[in-house]
Image 1 (cartoon, helix red, strand yellow):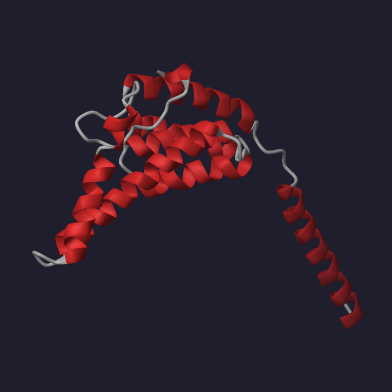
Image 2 (cartoon, helix red, strand yellow; image 1 turned 30 degrees about the vertical axis):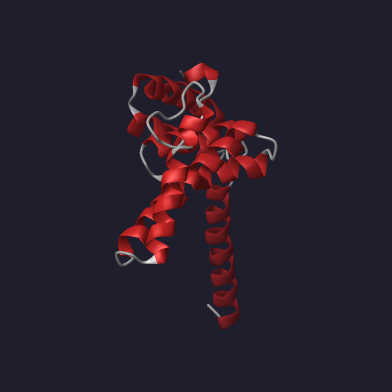
Length: 174
């Protein structure tokens, strides 16, 4: 075989290999929406039953399958909040708000997360300060004020005894 024939044969083999690879990429993806609907229902049930770890995992599956669903991100934020993963909850609420800027529940819950984060940072500041230090005193005073926020609101599902308010829940998972 000549060099020209070998080159053509190599070229044909390369095209065949590439065509095979391209064919695999065109396979239809599984119907993720149907799986997501089932996961969402199971997540809602797990959340209502108090199995928050399972609910968070399932809500994460839902948002992976339906990344433009603001309510799914909101519910993921609620589950992460209940697991005391405030940074992750805040990110989920922010994602819901980017999708739907008027999502009142996600906006409210993001505010609650930020209050709790502020409170934790101020507690750390007060603990790090020297006794009698002005920063320590001011941090402690602000922490006390934040702790009374829940008492000031006094509505259903709000903190009692000086706890910041709790997040709001959707009606269909309580």
